[in-house]
Image (cartoon, rainbow, N blue to C red; front, side, top):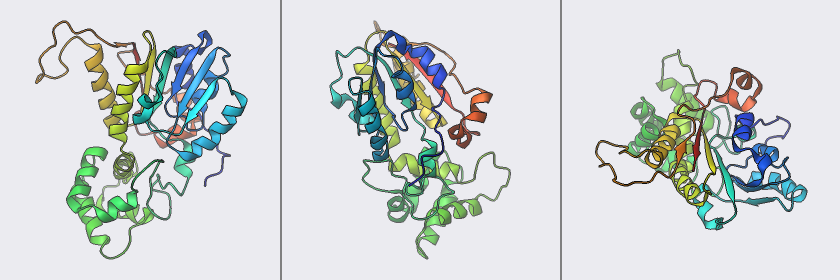
Length: 309
């Protein structure tokens, strides 16, 4: 376990609150409750209500304090994005839905989760409600399968070399977090990295273990269905893969033209969403300095995309 002493700052909090205007009341869905940063700020306004989701069981413990303090205005569900539609949230005046696709500082520092290449011990990376771990992936999947995971989920150029090295090493001894990070560093011999050499591979493993891509897509589909007309959907992304998916998804719902040259333009199509900001909002230099969670993503682009239904 990680101590709760390190204060967590939700990303782009001021910007998000100014956009969703909780002072006017209504119900908001915090799809990534985490440490409760967004929910806490929204609940400062007496007319607002929160339905919070998180797959991490540790977040449930934090949510119990909210349930006691805001018993009439806060509900927590230990569920994944893909289960959002199961909650039957229609006719609840859903004015805003927030997805923060990053992970908190406390999760990064939790050695049991093993999200960081600085962690020690067994490979894990499970965020909750999982069916397998990073250890299972590294030890049970074929060399080719590992290569594809690193290539497509981590956008790792050295995917083939890394998977080959893993295949050799796992036949000698069990690969733990430290061993994997060191192995990747050895394969990627260049020393002019803007980010740690293992960042993309670890990202790929985390995405695969938690089925983050399918969860995101299903979560967005469900959010589009339950959001009230005039409601706002906000998505904070932390890597280019997430950002491409979010942009593509909403491009198809907010533009009266084909999203691909291979698809015909739909006649009489009615746009479901309107893009509020054509360019995504990014954290200020001041926030990056102050927010300990953002320091982890310092060399990675962080975007806030906003859509109005």
